Length: 378
Ligand SMILES: [Zn+2]
Image (cartoon, helix red, strand yellow):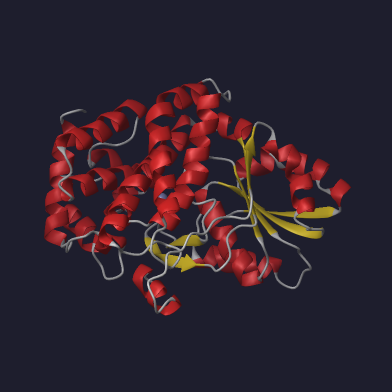
């Protein structure tokens, strides 16, 4: 389903909408509170966990310790690694016909995207415990579905948000720095995309116009990233939590999620979807591609040079891509650049949330110009 179709079918009037998960819990050792948190939400009995490798290794022993005392009996299934139709169907089949009270997803962004789709099909509440702060996925009510080859196939929108998002920052602090940095890239675009949607009076990702609240949270997200990014990266390098890391994880997981959904998306994520078409980019993470999408958006919008360069320099400082080569694209290959641009302006793409008509030709020019600017810093 495309972004715009959803809004039209949900509302006949242009209403402002804000939506969020039911409860957000974050801190060092939060996993130890998972049993009490699920109990207070009224969940009991068998509960299905879909977990990536790190979560099974590091968290499963804790789940098995804290859940039975509150009457919860976990069944843990390994996540296959891609949020694809085949993987969603496999997990739905595994969870069908059993009296599970909820589906818990533990892992990165693709895990949480998959688990929301599975929970939706099983008509059960979703609970997300991210082990990374690598994307804005955990708090949202939509999933990006990829092909088995890793290209973006489409979006699925759900009526219900996760009942609970619980983030153990000790686990996040032990993840590779690159994952946190990718989350910064994803979250950095949030404010600039929300600002655009606000200006153009277009719709957000929860079926309405942006509220002032959604846009303000996106701005707060950006302010935290700019202030705390380097210090939070240093904490992850040392594999410890710190106040800066706590604020940054909240920005990456909570504020970016609320900000993009209730604030809206624009060119940055559309260019991400374009970049993902090319096999050369498949070694790049979501937020790395979004970061280059952000540079493209700022150039395309004609934002002041001071803002464009501030963002480029910040990305360079924390280790986010500033050139096409850094997301696996050959900038001198006309076909590759054209492919990105063409995919980024297909009907229903968020590039059409800009306050002006966005064409593939204009995106080609912006991709090239952003790459040139980025290369001056490389
Ligand atoms: Zn994103």
